Image 1 (cartoon, rainbow, N blue to C red):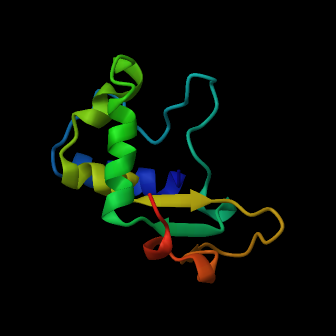
Image 2: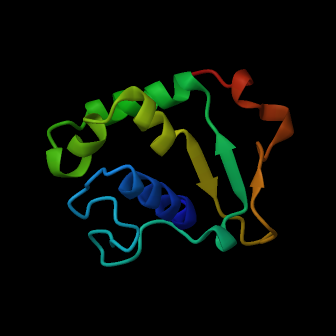
Length: 116
């Protein structure tokens, strides 16, 4: 996850009066005590996902719905908000640490060509 995008979305939600009880706080840490995600300066690729892939991510979380503390809040999101939160994948590429590109990293394998 992109820490910069998390912070931006958090600030927008707060400006809209949305309270989160600390869950979406960009300063929050994971169960392992480490920050969630990576700073944008360490991310090489931002990949927008097609709607069917976003829907598959939602179904995968539904399969783990018994883990309510982990996924319950994500399943409670509207489909529009879920797409905003999970519709972009971020990848680091240590061998090519240039600035983040908003693109598909393998041109010959565009998301529309993927089967799922």
